[in-house]
Length: 476
View 1 (cartoon, helix red, strand yellow):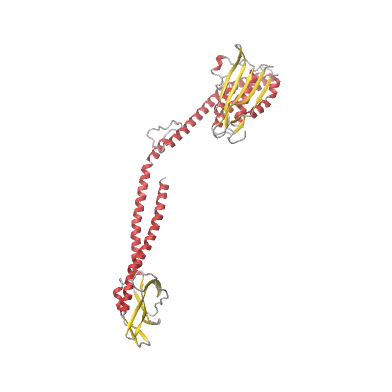
View 2 (view 1 turned 135 degrees about the vertical axis):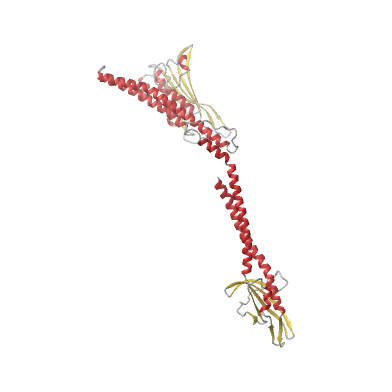
């Protein structure tokens, strides 16, 4: 966080300082050029005052008697040198340095000075120079004309002054940048103290300590993070509790069939029972233990599906029809009067969970329904409503009614809890799996005795699940 803030602040500020320093250097050079250009113009005017016209009116000749020493008064110091050149009326060289490049430009339309002067940069004797060219009218007894006076100066003093301005500015800007970096570092260090304190608190916790972090005293900026951590720990606590309960129940429930299996094997070895009978008993025990293990794994899988987020959109009616078709041989073997009535009923759920729900409820009904009895299965969509967006929703109801003995009042309170078996035996996990699945889908499961004139005629297992809205994505 500190590094990102420092980069986010110092990089733009540094770029701004760099651009500002470059612009300041250019402005300083222009200002220095303006100041020293006045010196070049003054020296050119001094030379112009020393010009004269000799000869005849038919052939006037420009004469210059300017010693080079006259320019020494205009030299700033010994670091720069000045040169001049005077050109006559016809462009002929008159005085000064004859190898100084001649001027071929044009005078500006609106100059900064009340004189016919132009300033430009050039190279003389391999060195860059600043040159002022002055058009000086000259009159004498022999006639009049316009002389061209060029005064050049090397740039050492100008560049030195510009560099001094730049270095001085960069030092101040660097100091400002350092102050900004120190302030940002200190402010971030101070502002992130609660984050470091929270990190130390979490790091100091024991591996099995998932109690919520106390919210009082937590800064407002960290409150959403702490709330999310507490919520994650709450879910983790539920998952751990489920795993502990699963391990405890598994060890408890598998102990009995394993003990029985061991006793049967020992009995078979001693020859207490015939070999065929011993094998049949061992097979029955193994089948029971296998079924129990599969149901316990199914119970654990429900919790895994609960953690997978939003399930897809499926048709419960299609799932119930598939399960009923799978169990058709058992229904036919029991000679049941079977009735199946369905209509499209979209719900949000995982395919395995919906199949397991329908399979367990139908198995329970088959187990308790007498031979030749009646078994009715219906899937309906109830309470269909349309919201403001045009989406329809409601409640999907799965009703499985058998003609069995119903549920005794003494068993109703604990029915549905793991390993709470009914009077007809079983592991007691079927209804527990169903309740877990229905709970994970946000629905309800009710087991109601169906009575007529005070006589129990059977049991209705009723599952109600929220219907998936018609605008939900996913296959139905």
